[in-house]
Length: 200
Figure 1 (cartoon, helix red, strand yellow):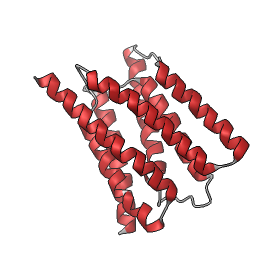
Figure 2 (cartoon, rainbow, N blue to C red; figure 1 turned 120 degrees about the vertical axis):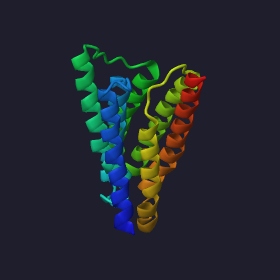
Figure 3 (cartoon, rainbow, N blue to C red; figure 1 turned 30 degrees about the vertical axis):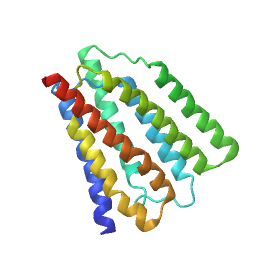
Figure 4 (cartoon, helix red, strand yellow; figure 1 turned 120 degrees about the horizontal axis):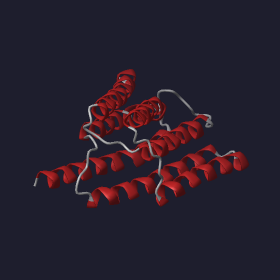
């Protein structure tokens, strides 16, 4: 059961990335490079700080290491796609700039303290700040092209990742999932809400 949960989590994360890129390539979505650069920084920091812990494992916190190639693939495709369209502009808003600054601060904090757990928690807090800004934009959005399928796959992947976290009692995994499951659910609600507003 443990291995099945790990494989389903990794598989759903992979499928979500392939579907996201496919939709972007067909023009169904209009992904913003700055958003995915920030996501790449955040998931890389999550993986890096987790890997500094003595309890690190490829499987017990599967959602984190599996998300690194997921985001890297999407970011690469978004950059290439925007470059081909002649619309490659990377412009971070104020909240994103603060999040990047906070990420750099976490790296400095870790080098000084060597405290992987606190560094990891700080990264998740930065992720919450970035989510709050995105949620606010989605709440007032008149039009949204974010694919609902992507976020549904990510939600189910994180739900499957609960079992390995429970079996191995991985505190880092619990912290990550406690952050991502509610925020991903929120993204699904906000995207569905915006899509209903578009139809009406």
